[in-house]
Image (cartoon, rainbow, N blue to C red; front, top):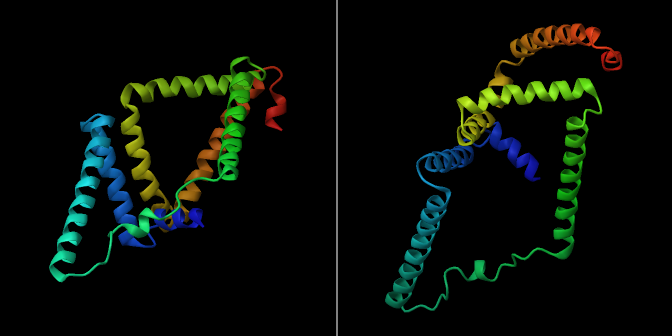
Length: 193
């Protein structure tokens, strides 16, 4: 179900909810461009505390004036169970372990040149990333990724035919270039098949 909710957010099916989530992400990322992470976390915590303390005082005054005994305004949330079970923790650590091990195996394979073509592709990617890193910092890339996540799916749905046509042309051109490169590298024929 969370996956479907994420898809609904990215496709702007509920404009109000998507706007709140998108705006919150942008506000957080723009805040991080101006302030340190520690400052942003501290300001967010202070804002949340200010809101909850103000609401608690407001409800206490309201109860005193109306002479009611409604109790603590956050009682339902205070009684809510928020602990993770041992099974949930085991599930998440197993998943994390799988991804870490897979990543380490793949990096070992690439860095120790088990397959020359794949290692060369990885080297080209790393070389391109040096240029990306020179142009943008990590926060700018994260900001661009968030904006892209909320805009590209909608643009693709609206212009799917044209985009698929151009992607097909690009894919054909890339395959032709890769085939030429593989033809010049001995032992690389198996990748072309």
